[in-house]
Image (cartoon, rainbow, N blue to C red; front, side, top):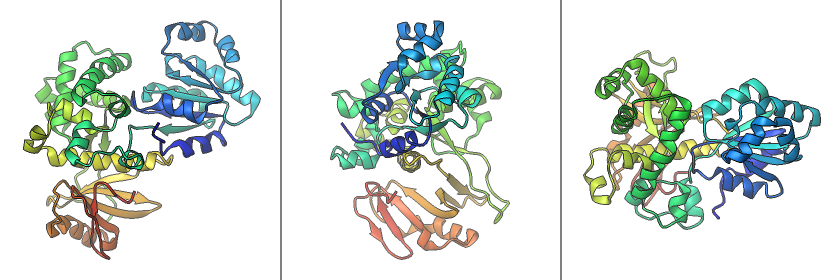
Length: 384
């Protein structure tokens, strides 16, 4: 089994909080991870209809049967359980009593804010990171293979193609979760909207344009974007706009939580299609943005990631803020180092005042170069 980078963080939080909550996309490995980290805990899943019925009909008896240490998977399926959990954890006043997990971030956080605020540490698990795959020597050497395959655990555990996996994933999980979160009647329109989002990956979000192309209202488009975020399908990268300039684009960019899923939505299933696609650069950019997000989340930190673009179209793909210090990152899918990759970084350095030593280019090549004022970092070794 691949050791997850978040394991130490989960154990640390369990020693400090009575409840630890782990959320994230379906099939990202939450159950496997928790069973590994907490092998001596009882495990129950509320996806099981019989167990769920017991929890709904007799929450006190259900929790008593859980014992003093228990993992409750898909906890948001029984919302009333959280009030009873609050009473128990307060009366025991011990750390590491319950480990909760769930794939519906909105529903889970809503219940936590009502009943378990201050009593639980909330962590997020995403599919494998490049570093995790590399540590176990199963990271593909070919960048295109990584972009097409993505990082979901099952693709590295079973002999299944990305096309087979993600076709099933969309039907089994995404569509079902969407129906649970919101009663969407026209699934055809929703699927069309989802594919339009994929076609706009890495672009500044224009909700009105997306709504028009999908044949829906702007209100509906905003609602569906929120649903996709809550289901860990896509995310928004906000712009960076501190006081150094008022001429900044303020709309977010959109990215997907996995490039394999993204490629499937774009009907890109092989290396030839990917190489010919005008979105290959955006797909690579998506990979790097998500990798930097995982690096923060696996440490239990909230990612401080942004992009920068002014009205003159000067742009930096990614800004990362750590303890008040800003790092600027340009992302290029090409395999050859090019001085032009630094044009946007130099402009941002002039406008913001950050040093060129705090900038770097992450690119699609295999060899890294680390100079004082220029760094070209391979996608395989991003110094996260």
